[in-house]
Amino acid sequence: MSLIDTQRSFLAEIAADDDAPPSSLGMAIYRNAYRARLSDALAISFERTRRWVGEDLFDTAAAHYILAHPPSNWTLDAFGDRFSEALETLFAEDPEVAELAWLEWHMQQAFAAPDRSELTAAQLGAAGLADPDWAEIRFTMAAGFAARPTRHDLARLWHSLSDVGTPVEGVDTTEPQVLIVWRQQFRPRFRLIDQEEAAVLDNLSNGLPFGQAASECDPDQLGRWLAAWLTDGLFSAFSVDAATDLAVPDAASRSLT
Amino acid sequence: MNQTIDPFTGFGLGLRKEHHADFLAEQQPVDFVEIISENFMACGGRPLATLRAVRERYPVIMHGVSMSLGSARGPDRAYLAELKALARQIDPLWLSDHLCWTGIDAHNSHDLLPLPYTEEALDRFCANLTFAQDVLERPLLIENPSSYVSFAESTMTEWEFLAAMAERTGCYLLLDVNNVYVTSVNHRFDPAAFLQAIPPDRVRQIHLAGHSAGPESMLIDTHDAAVRAEVWELYAQAVRLFGPCATMIERDDAIPPLAELLAELDQARSAARLPA
Image 1 (tube, helix red, strand yellow):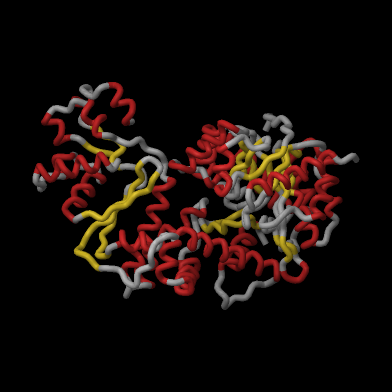
Image 2 (tube, chains in turn purple, orange):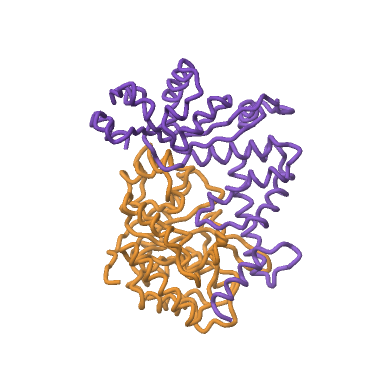
């Protein structure tokens, strides 16, 4: 048998389900190790979700996921990237489960996301932007920024499932909101925001200039949001068109690229 | 590859997150630390900041588990690029990976899977390793794995494969003495014969670790316990054959306080000083 055929056969055998028993004791060891390693990776990545649904249900869901989504990335840390999607189907009656898993996954991704500097209000002020420039400004989001809609009070659920949290019986439903995740310095953070604020952030994260991203907003409200976003470190950099770039002080330019 | 790796003698430990604070709080009595490269590749935030701080205090060895040099499809170029980027930042003593494959056709097992020891596998492994060394612009150290199956089509022993690989590619060897012992029990060969067939001038590092009893008299390389007496004996033989070289203890599960591992490392220092 050629090397490639040997390897395909070997991998298929260790990744197979129990309908196909392993051909030898050694292959059983490799199969057990494969399953245990992937199952452990999910249990570590989704510790709170496991606590919320219970170990047995979680481990059953993990076993389904391992069979349906074999790992393809070189890093085991990426293995759970589609787990929250899988939970949407497996826990269709309990939609907060997939939302909680999404939050855990993105908090973990934000924790180790490649570094980006934090844009402060002082740096933005030092750029000396003229009024017309504000409509053209574009922001780069902070490390690990991600967003998704939710109808649950995930903040309360998240804290209740920490090592020191007080367990809750159920999760409160809310008006439609948006969950955002990012990292500020070394700390992964999340916040629930209303849909109007989220729409502006979504536009900005997709590269729209500020004026276009916030065209529907009350200017006073927008000012308050911008101040809060800068305080929370939601942006890592900004840019304006080439003509205005010349007005940005050197110090600010260097620190923001 | 014409580049060489100078010998580095000393005793080190794997850097595990349970001990990050200990390594940074005060200078620990180790000559180097070894990281799992993949834990810090394409990453930032606290993990990378910690590694940089550790690097300011200790020499670092980068040990990988995902290069998959035995894969019939060849190594992943994006992986090699990320590894090279991290190596540029960290300036390690050297990079290492395993005599194994980890996946094929975009399916990664995240395990160190065994190769049949055939001419085809040797050709493929050497071609992949040469490519990786060229991309990384340095020779690598290749470690012998533990294994639980053997292949009827093998035409050479593991040690013959390792020696031929080192000869053809100019790579160096990371001799895992625990893996030699575990594999020798599982496949019923004399571990001393393994050691005696290894070219001494290629060995730059030794790994020590604990193992566990598996089913039907098999041993499993678990890294969750202290180094066993049989492995210490084999280590003493290895030191006599290969002279002093960088030695480290791996512990990846049931990780004890750092002081316990430092005491075990002292045992390695003592074993390395035993007269021939």
